[in-house]
Each structure stands twice: as C-alpha cells, then as structure tokens.
Length: 97
Image (tube, rainbow, N blue to C red):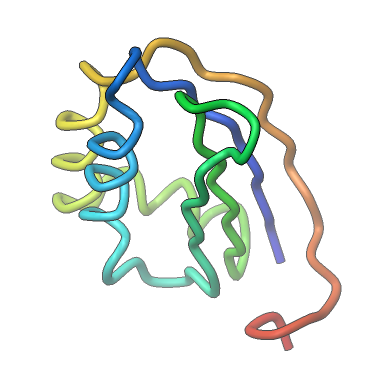
C-alpha cells in the first residue's frame, strides 16, 4: 500500500473551484482505494487530499490518465501554494483491507 496526504492552498476565493477541479479527475483511477478531498477547517483557502493506492506505481501511473491531466490543468491556475505532503504506509481501515 501507498498513501499520500497533502495540503494545497488556493488563491483567495478559489478554494471551492479548486476542490471541484481536483475531484473531476478522481473518478476511475486504477489502483486507487481511496481519494478524499477535504476543506481545511482552519484555513479558508486550503484543502487536504488524502489518497490510498495499491502501490506507489499506481499513484504515479494515475498522473498520466487523461482525466487526471485535465483536472490538473484546470486546477493549476487556482493554486497559490503546495503545502506539506506526507507519504504514508496504510496498514488497515475501511477500504484498505
């Protein structure tokens, strides 16, 4: 398993559009067990993306999918900053078994 948790900060007023753009590309991604986009409760411009993949190769392969590439292209103009990103090793939980 491969997990990734990352913070992305939108340009002022663009958080909802950023979240929507990222979610557009998250439909059919082979090897993806979970993909969650969440609004940061303390920062009105930030979102967190939490991902669980079969392995790191599946995550890397997803970046070449047309839907993911289109979502990235739509999201990039809305992004002010990429915050911290934390790779993880999921060991259990819903969708991880």
